Amino acid sequence: MSEQARPKVAVHKFSSCDGCQLALLNMGDDLLALSQLVDIVHFAEAGPVDEEQEVDIALVEGSISTPEDIERINGIRQRSKYLISIGACATSGGLQALRNMADTDNWVRSVYPRPDYLSVLDQSSPIADLVQVDLELWGCPVNSGQVIAALRDLLSGVTPRVDVQPVCMECKRQGVVCVMVSRNEPCMGQITRAGCGALCPSHGRGCYACYGPAEQVNSRAVSEHFIEIEVPVEEIRVKFGSINSNAPAFKRARDS
Amino acid sequence: MNQEQKFLPRHDLDRLLQQLKEESYNCLGPVVRDGAIQYLPITDSSDLPAGVELDQVPAAYQLEFTDGDRLFNWSNGPQALKPLLFRPRENIWQVQRDSSGNLAFSQADESVEPTAVIGVRACDLAALELQDRHFLVPGAEDPHYKKRRDSLLLIGVDCSQPSDTCFCVSTGDGPDLRSGFDLAMTELEDGFVLRAGTKRGQKILDALNLSAATETQLQQVAIQSEQATARQRRLLPDAGVQKLLLQRPEHPHWQNVAERCTACGSCTSVCPTCFCFSEHSETNLDASVSQQVREWSSCFIPNHSNSHGHPVRADIASRYRQWLTHKLAGWQEQFGRSGCVGCGRCISWCPVGIDITQEVNKLVEDTG
Ligand code: SF4
Ligand code: SF4
Ligand code: SF4
Image 1 (cartoon, rainbow over the protein chains, first blue to last red):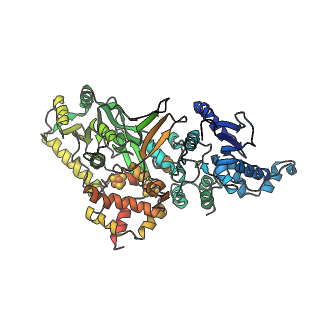
Image 2: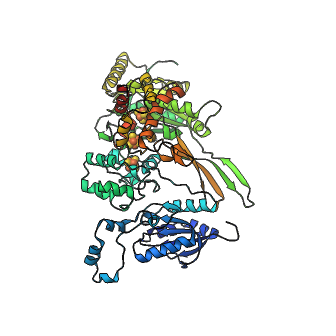
Image 3: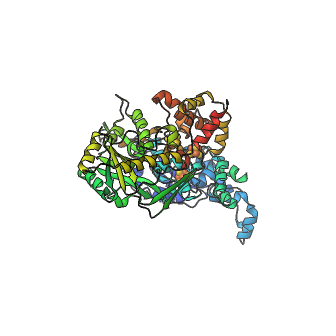
């Protein structure tokens, strides 16, 4: 990527809360530095809107949940050299994928007075279910430091580093006292992908698994231990079935 | 070393801390924080955990607050000395690019101050000796580790209350301090029996100008040591038997552990002898500065065994086997002793309560 032609970057949104776009806006000075290095041609939350441009790097927030989304993501894929899905919605289907376990039609009819105005798919799907994704950055929301690191790596022409170690590793490196061992707080950190900096355990709470499944997910071992420390079964189901309920490893755990 | 033992009355403990300050040491000591005992900066003896007792069992660590006077009536905290020397995460070198594109490399240069650590346990010191052997190989010393190691003064305490998880008796590393300390203390009801282990320790002891410990006090020390030894219930088979693990790579019990283990890496992180790390570079957005970061790694995480982009040890059974066989058998070839000092941390801090002593005993009990 030469000096003259600055790489073009687009930030796209699908079904989501915009939190990941906000996480990008929260980069502060780095956002200014980034704007010197690349042309941000599309980033609705920040201003520029030109979804149709061909870009070098596309960051995609949100899940695929309407027929229209399918068309859009296919177009975006065609116009993007490198596509990164960011955040829980884009990587697993997100909170809205809870409806994958329910009868969508039924819900739509019970919530909306004119359900015929709506056109929704009955599943909320991660981007990678529809098109090829070159890199996934998990998290709810995504950690802007990870986005910066990935962009920097791409600008330097190296493959971005992917961190799939569990949250426990981050917890221990930070000297956080394990909340599961010292306070019986049920914690999903053992089977959750690192990236948040062990945010919840460092504030005395168990991990909610918002960074999705780690590389190894021995859900049976974790669930059995939760039962041993007297966590109600319904609560254990919720732990596997919240933000990343649709991630295959968590889905399997919930169904078993 | 002059092995003469002195007595420091409890109400004079601050004289010791004062002496350390006069000799320009920063003092770290056991402090209760976030429900655990941790080595943190202390100003005087009132920061120490008076009356605190501790219950450790697999996957549980519970402090108990009594109105007793004893300051060291507990076994250990979530970390030994390891994080003070082998940092969980640190920059080891960096490279800067100036406006004309030239690169300048420099070693990270942390300023280190003389630091005294009070309350160090026998297992901590045995583990430290192993870490020293790894990081201070003559001719290939790790400069970051070495600098911090040289700044330490170690004041140990004999363990009077081993936890249910402790088994240093069976590894031969405790409960009394054996070596590696500058100054050793045994806490009795009304004070401390002190002995020096190095010249530096002796100098501090001399400066305190204490009277010799009485015969009765020395008897109390011996009785306390016997009681602490007798409290321990867990057993690790001796080093010769530990070596059998190398001959049992196909033992079905590896799979049995793998069904319970989550590969979280907590055990290796709290283990005071584990030394694996990984390195990567972190570059700022305009690529003007890049830091080489070294951080604790673990044989339980995928990239630890990556070769050509794929993990050689792809499942939990092979990772647990790697941990145990290396620690208990492989280390004997590398360091002339087992890598386990019996601190029990991997038992209490394993979030699902896997117990190394039980697993090893299963693995060696029959012929596999
Ligand atoms: S608090 Fe959670 S993430 Fe941290 S070490 Fe314990 S189980 Fe792992
Ligand atoms: S033995 Fe326990 S602490 Fe170690 S990796 Fe397995 S679950 Fe984690
Ligand atoms: S293997 Fe476990 S008991 Fe042995 S030294 Fe390491 S943490 Fe302590």
